[in-house]
Amino acid sequence: MGNINNKKLYIESYGCAMNFADSEVVATIMADNGYTTVNSEHDADIVFINTCSIRDNAEQKIRHRLTGLKGTKRKNKDLVVGILGCMAERLKDQLIEEEKLVDIVVGPDAYRDLPSLVAEVDGGSKAVNVLLSLEETYGEITPTRLHSNGVTAFISIMRGCDNMCSFCVVPFTRGRERSRDPQTIVEEATDLFNKGYKEVTLLGQNVDSYLWYGGGPKKEFKKLSQEEKDSSVDFAKLLDMVAKVDPTLRIRFSTSHPKDIVDDVLHVMAKHKNICNYIHLPAQSGNSRILDKMNRTYDRKWYKTKVERIRDIIPNCSISCDIIAGFCTETEEEHQDTLSLMEWSDFDFSYMYYYSERPGTLAARKYSDDVPLEVKKRRLTEIITLQNNMSARKNKEREGTVVTVLIEGKSKRSDDDFMGKCDENISTIFPRENYKVGQYVDVLIERSTSNSIMGKALGLNEYFEKETLEKALVS
Image: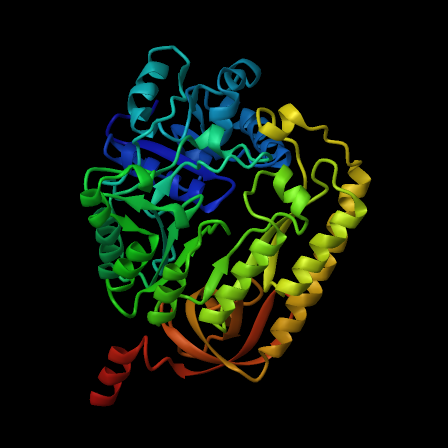
């Protein structure tokens, strides 16, 4: 290991935004114990890989990455390698047994234990802690913003999931649902704003079931006393609280479950200009029988009602979706139901996959993964083609309109262009000129693809950049 006053940590994250947010918590815990985070595994005394188990290809990517690390460890025999997150929780001791270079395996609720686990490894042992918690939220830990653009940041508002969708491994890898003290969330958002951040995304496996009452992160509202109910904070109230941190701090959130998103949330979104008009609303399938088999607890009609309600209350709201092709026993007709639901819902974009059986889930225990792989892939291709066509058309319709964009950084295609997201969460590209990262600009859309919109900046946005514009007029 390196000198105790100069210990270096490298963290690599895979999977969902929750994993990236967790890595920032880990960086803080390790910094409090003398570790500096570095940008290369070759400069590190410890390498942590924060993993994802949501699909088999995600796990295979991690295994391939571990193979690549073997060369690094051959050059630095003292290097400590740790596997964090969902894959660590799911595979536990198997990782240490199979992957000989892994020294530490730590689940999502055991990150506070990392310094003592590292000490165990220094003493010549392998170290494992994958205990799940009913209380851990890391609520009071200020995350170290890794690879930050200084403009956008994630805030975890809850952990775990109680939904038990039959295809999903998350309840087994992240445990039961528990919500974080709303005051710590508001304090984190305030701190970020004071440090110059312009946008925060509130994260949870199912943000709409967020619930905090005066005594703690109790989940079941029906079991609360009247006094507890009166003092409780649900997601609508939390969203309102964070929006009031400052009217120029833009707010996003993810992910919503169709069964839990309520009108109160939509009305709060409509009330605040700084809450983005964008909702990620995973459908997974467009067929009621398959939805029941997935244990999604809603049917096709219910989902369509939610989409209608969103568009009634927030007419210009962008909606995106998750879709799984080829779930157990899915017929061709049921696949067509998914395509028709997508077309009816007119999603702005979607995250699309074919079904990948996850060990330990209800589907793996009860159902046969009986849709042939070539059929899954063909159905997925049809889903992707439909969505690409819808996205291209919807972005084409944005041509000639003006959108407000928060500048996040340079475009990947050219250093002469800036990139940011508009309110509806569409990637927007425009010439840099004299604008700066972190500014809100109004952009006239002139061209588009299925993935992005392009145009020219007309100037700073009058609402979000009011102070900047007023200072410019005075000078």
